[in-house]
Image 1 (cartoon, helix red, strand yellow):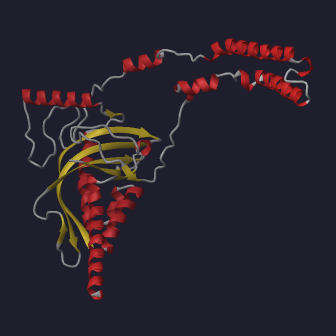
Image 2 (image 1 turned 180 degrees about the vertical axis):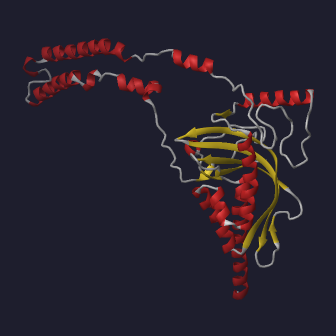
Image 3 (image 1 turned 90 degrees about the vertical axis):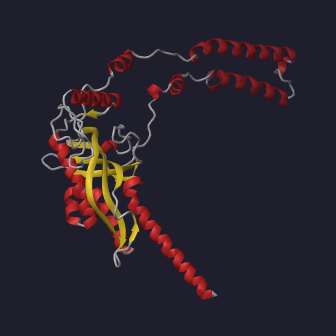
Length: 355
């Protein structure tokens, strides 16, 4: 009976480890993100046609999380507390009243009554002085503690009036044409999107421009078609290197931080006798969510919908543990690319999006 219990315990532990590894591998697709987006690591990227819902937040990162700060200038309550004068009972008035009361108490202890040697007349005199001092303090300090309210500043109104949607069209990956050339084809080589011509192309271009303007996407550095083609190629190269466990290629294609997380996943797979096979990757649709420059480094966050064969196999037998080895599965992810001065683009972060 004890031997049977030990066998059950070993099976339970094995199943737990297996499910944990599968979950870690699947986290690249639908789980939390990893890597860095610079100062926007903890900010939500704008929604796009490819990824209309928010991506998973970046949970594994070396970027320090900024501490929340409160600006007193924008907090009326803090301003009121800061600008308030000390109350009457906290300054000279409090000292005076305390002295009067203390004098009366000392008089009682000495047998002269609360009013001291004068008796009841002294008591009335002290009470009258106390009441008069309180009324004077309430009248003097009451008006100075009223909070002041101000309307919206002119700069805030002008900023709100001048804010608008961008007037340019955000390009899409796989279009095969330069920025501004109307086309309805997204994801070259897939054969899934039909091309438009004549009035159809014009309508598609207008619709794409309207969608980009409505979603408020921004491109601050001018991503061109060459960059878009490179992003599509890197999607395939990184997936192929990951499936082949090619560490040298991953180091070339990704930042050191992103490489550390990918290497960690590959190491966990190898430790448990599993292998993640990724092949037949092709882009279905993609567009730029935002692109910016900070500290001389360019960043571009791109939403990509792609299909691939993505399965987990046992290393020893080749048996499929998770995934479909015969049919393509679709995934939607946000990939952030980073380019330092004089260098090529590298993948710096990957976030899963619920398809």
